[in-house]
Image (cartoon, rainbow, N blue to C red; front, side, top):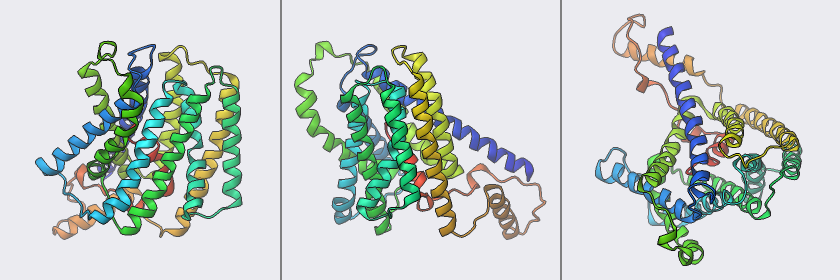
Length: 369
């Protein structure tokens, strides 16, 4: 039994490592592709459309051709009233976020992403899914002050890139809240594949509108580098990141996911200064981000307490594995001491309906970048 639990924990840490590597890799890869100083493909909408087209195509193959995943019951009314608005804000968040890479550094972008809880809290209040609370408001104020200090200390501050990134954060926050309001109230749960199957094509259509106006007139084939393997590997990494996020949450839970996300942010900030020498971090950057991070940690702590107060006490992962293993052995007429190990696939997964507000925030900030 101990050996079986240790195996599960080792696999969990492996999944966390894969998530951190993929998340950091996709962000750095996107920056390298888009930056005029490196691969020089300054077309963020086009790159995002490649991601959406590739993800939608793979999801179509898995659902309709190979039938690996079963489609959900999607009515026209649900698609129009739920999927379409969610896809619109999803497309907007990706468009704005990728455009920011053209103007500001990866390190500064990660610091600005500390505003994600602030944006989500504001959108939740506006949409009526959360209540204004003094303790949360003070945390949001602390995060905002930290981001302002970090921005003030940014040497290569660019107002256009900052505005794009902040708009992307608020668009993503609104998407998260709409997902909660629209899909969950209708009892519709989408797994990673079905999410891409329904949302990616719709997002592609929405992105085609700004692409036609902003990027199509500026595209000159003779001046644009197009390397099939570069874009294929980039889209494949983005797709793998989407799957890894759900896999990690299913294996660990939202709290561990959030801790891994904070660790990933620090690693990414450090790596970006090495890979992209033009990214310079100042003392004010670090101080401001540290202040903002304190607010984020306190906010997460409050949300964790709220979740625990509203949910029944559940067993820990090892306890649940042990319990399920014993029940399985009993149902098979065998003794729990029979020495048969539990396969990895039999470990209980946390369904998407059990994801906390923290988990949805963390998930949304990394999906399909």
